[in-house]
Amino acid sequence: MTILLATLNARYAHASLGLRCLLANMGALTAQTELREFVIGTRSTDIVEKLLASNPRIIGFGVYIWNVDETTRVVALLKRLAPQVKIILGGPEVSYESAGQPIVQLADYLITGWGDVTFPLLCEQILNGPQPLMKVHAGVQAPLAELPMPYDLYTAEDIAHRTLYVEASRGCPFKCEFCLSALDKTAWPFALDGFIEELEKLHARGARLFKFVDRTFNLNIKSSLKIMQFFLDKLAAHPDDPVYAHFEVVPDHLPDALKAGIMQFPPGTLQFEIGIQSFNPEVQALVSRKQDNAKAAENIRWLCEHSHAHLHVDLIAGLPGEDIASFARGFDRLVALQPHEIQFGILKRLRGTPIIRHTDEYGLIFDPAPPYTILATDRISFADMQRLVRFARFWDMIANSGRFANSLPVLLGDAPFDHFMQLSDWLFARTDATHRIALERLAVLVGQWLAERGMDADAAKALVASDYAGKVNLPRSGARVKTEAVAEKSLPQRQARHMAA
Image (cartoon, rainbow, N blue to C red; front, side, top):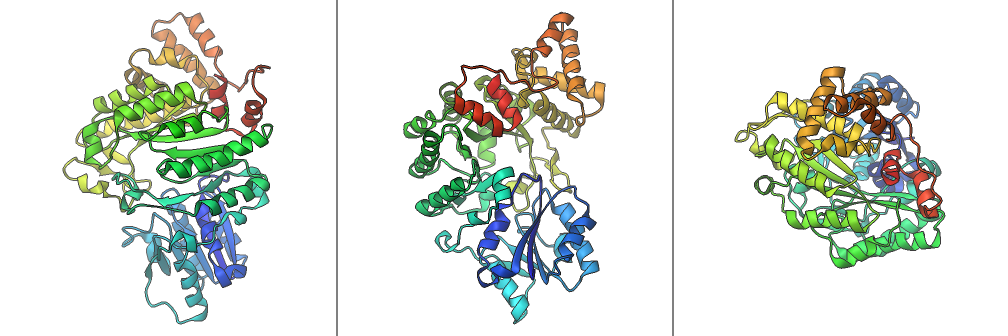
């Protein structure tokens, strides 16, 4: 192949939508272009060997916060072994603050922003002249109607074994300063009828898991309803072979028409990712986040009580102006709403985001290495931030995993944040680890903690044993609808455990 499009995905299951968008727009160069996807953790020499086996003239790399270090090593090896191969970089990690980045210094060319139009033009110049004079090229943002959609490029293997990422729109109208979407002017929708036709083709080929990357799926309710109706029609026509859809939604925008559609989805077919980030109005104003907290809480409660949607709700620790007490109040408020998962994230400084303007006033100290995690602020010391990092990890292992559904309410009691922080500190003191803790050992430790907190030792052991600790045993209930039982087969295990609980 003359041109290779390559990236290192976080997991094999993550099929790169970005690379496929580029390939779909290669025009006359399509026949000379192929995808090469790898997974982080793969030896750099193995990646380089596979890339060079195709004897390429150009390699384009998608660079992200999770793969920049490893991609830098790959590019460094390529420039030593095959300096004649032209390296083009693109992606969010290199689109901003690129000066001084080692990977940019190593590469031949950089495309900032959208690459759909600019990448093939740059390749054409490299191959056929005149040679590009500039190293950095600002990506042309073409109207979405002019861009071919990439979904035919998902292979049969992708459909069978990987999550399929789709996008009904690009961009975001909101200006949250911790997010790269703050730099967008608005959101741009794809032509809806054409997009649904692509979903139809994917479904006909066997696709059943669809993850929407849209920042604000429920921004345009008419479009949201039409897309949701596509999935409802498939569920009605194929109840024994259900689809599963994942959407990111704005928490305070859930009109009655959308609620009516959501209520029609059976268990195991719908997931919402909901960004709360902070319940503190002063912090929200500081980072330019507009959110009606009362309405957001009301909508999350409604979804929990009146829908079968699996709810994954996000909070961010370390935002400027927020101390631990403020974060704890928001955390406890969210726990009371009882979403299935609370994703406890630690603030990261994505390159180009406006959050950096608060650095001096609020004492923001970020790790200089990817993923640029906040280390301390004027409100949260480094030691306390490390405690929060450990809390987040243990929360994922115990609460979000769904393995301790019966024990969790006892662990949290009437002060969820404080009680779980005490457990987190105790677990770390006992294990000196937040990774590679065997599930059986974790279960024993949770039982010991309950006993040390005054619970009868036998009762604590029985409580933990009643959970799904050690192995997953989903109930075999004849009362379950067939749709739900079939859907569980393709769900992540932790979601299946939440459904069973």
